[in-house]
Every structure is written in C-alpha cells, then in structure tokens.
Amino acid sequence: MLIALAFAALQGFWLWRAHVAAHAAAASATAALAQGDDPRAALERALTPEQRRRTRLVVRGDSVAVTVRLARSLPGVPRALRTVRAHASLEGP
Image (cartoon, rainbow, N blue to C red; front, side, top):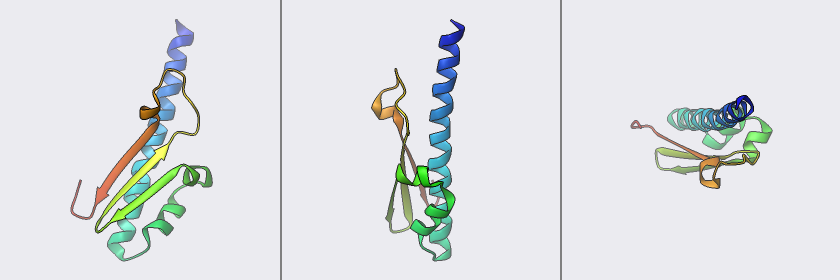
C-alpha cells in the first residue's frame, strides 16, 4: 500500500512539473509579445533544452498557446493526461 501511494505521488509530481513548465512558458511568451519581442525566443530562454524539445508554441494575434508533453511514460496515466496545455493572452485568461 505504501509503495502504491509513493508511486502515485511520483506520478502527481511529474504532472505538476509539466503544468508549471507550460504555464511559465505561456507567461514568458505573452510578456515578450506585450513588449514587442519574439515569443519563441522568450520561450527558449524560459525552458531547459529538454523541455524545449517537448514544447509546442502557437501564437495567434495577441494570444499564446503552449503544449508540453511529459518526457516519460507514466503507467496508469492515459496519454491525453500526459499532454499539458496552457493558454494566455494580452487581454487576460
């Protein structure tokens, strides 16, 4: 039982980490967009090389969408949940 709980906590940590990376990337790209800078360059500065390989950025007008895939497969976690999306815009959420 304790092993299962520890494993679930580890899965939760990896999912949380992906959410943090996605939201940090979206915030960084939106801030760059507000300043008139290149959002892709801001994204490269905000993330590690490993995170950049698993990240997709879409810029449409004044909004930004970031998709981050988890690096590792998590047993028991569906593929759809291993992909995290974050959206941000200059007008608000």
